[in-house]
Length: 153
Image 1 (tube, rainbow, N blue to C red):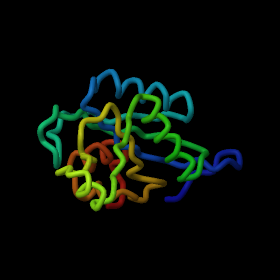
Image 2: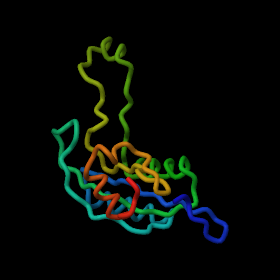
Image 3: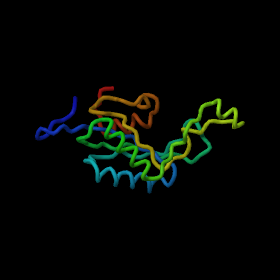
């Protein structure tokens, strides 16, 4: 199934994965509130506590998913999600070239799997899986299928 056309307006059906391990209850609710103001918030999955992946010396994550209808195109909607992350205080660490790290005698790269106040990623766009994490992380698949049980996987 592709986008839905309502009164000649294209409405895209999107599933967004949601995760937080810094004040997770507060930050998930805040993200939901912000997204509800900018697009048509349809539903949310149950949320689950999950262990961190990669960098494990951090609190557990609260993970779930939101089902949203938007008139925006994919890239515009993705930018809206990134803006919500920024507004909530998420700062992605800059990854510097390894040569710079060696010159500076630093032993590690910034950690992309570190703690975060909110993480919002498009997993499904008009019933098409667009994030490979759907297949790699059971909690993502579980929450997406709660929202779209008949999704063709």
